[in-house]
Length: 60
Image (tube, rainbow, N blue to C red; front, side, top):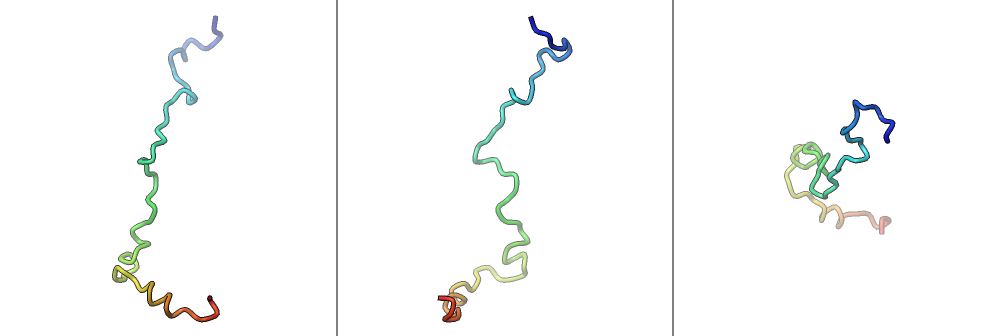
């Protein structure tokens, strides 16, 4: 015999709820559109190769 409120019979609690934890579920994107080259008003591509070639000798 159960001593629960009769109005809650059949209602499922949070512990019984199924939660989808698949990899495809995205809450927030990895990068926002304003944090891209286009968002900063720059051309796509970048100059990473030039920056690496021109770094000061004391950084090595």
